Length: 232
Ligand SMILES: *Cc1c(COP(=O)(O)O)cnc(C)c1O
Image 1 (tube, rainbow, N blue to C red):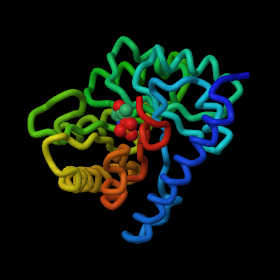
Image 2 (cartoon, rainbow, N blue to C red; image 1 turned 90 degrees about the vertical axis):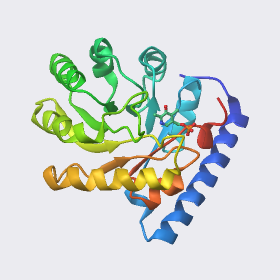
Image 3 (tube, helix red, strand yellow; image 1 turned 180 degrees about the vertical axis):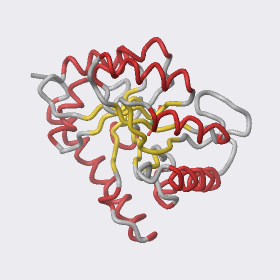
């Protein structure tokens, strides 16, 4: 049983979620998409495990974390909750075995070494992971994400891995460019990927500051921290 936050926190999350849902509905109406095509991943990093219980009670079952250690304590505290765990942070290869124990989806696969480590660790743990290839949309390679030219090779490696399945591509909009332009590039990369891997139709893009633009450019998974949970 998780305690904490109390009724005020719950009503705050209810209000935030209602607003987010309205904004999603509005952009979907505008661009002719169905909100049911979207998976809302609540990025709970820095927030307490009690928030996960509130979210689950509101039927938000996809939660995102970017640090394995912090995630693990929340995973352990949230034992009875039926949640799907998404790893969204930069991932060191040596953390793959821990991540494979309870995460269901990894959004940040950006190098072959990590594909191999996750596949081996998932096999050992007798688990199966869904994987997004993270693409860097920066002109200069920054923190995390594969060069667009390397996406095909990474996707092939994920596709060939027995314990991984390829969901699609993930990206974070770069700070030095209008996000719409970056999401447009991502959509092209996703279409190219899908021509080779027809099942890899997911696009994980859009955070609190830019999720409407991401939806307009085809995102299927939006990752919301601040808009849903408040300031960190
Ligand atoms: C923190 C984080 C988010 C959520 O960010 P907000 O701006 O708070 O919505 C989404 N994706 C990744 C990869 C993150 O690290």
